[in-house]
Image 1 (cartoon, one colour):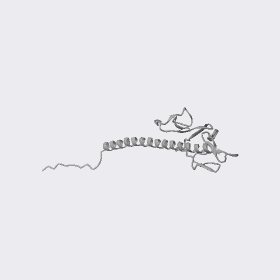
Image 2 (image 1 turned 90 degrees about the horizontal axis):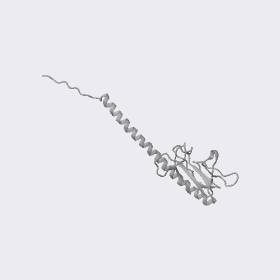
Image 3 (image 1 turned 30 degrees about the vertical axis):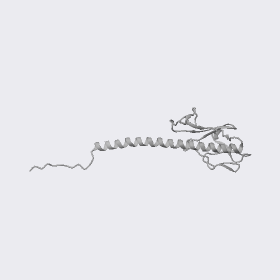
Image 4 (image 1 turned 90 degrees about the vertical axis):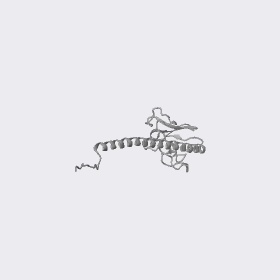
Length: 164
């Protein structure tokens, strides 16, 4: 009686392992790129909400003082100059991420700052009754964005802007 000898394989071949690892790598790459894009959109949504909140605070300041605050120059370019006392020796430059108080009145408990430490919101007073407030967006396909006009503070050249 002839017995056929059978062997049972208890592992994977090298080709099967390489194919499986390749498929996992491709799926991971696709998921990671989608995850990064979602994080960018989330930060852009936070920027828009921050600018609307600052816009409301600027309106409160306008109602109290009859004009919008001045904007910083030099090293303080893009910042709001309206913290501290309205008389000498103030007002001082307000720092994003800190409280905004003027004449012992709290305008904002925390003046929001950009979600990325490498970027900052930009405030410019155009006259006593007008200003522009801008944030650099990461998602260039955002339909609320506009071209930043080659400014150095916005690396993507795509920004969100609010005015009174």
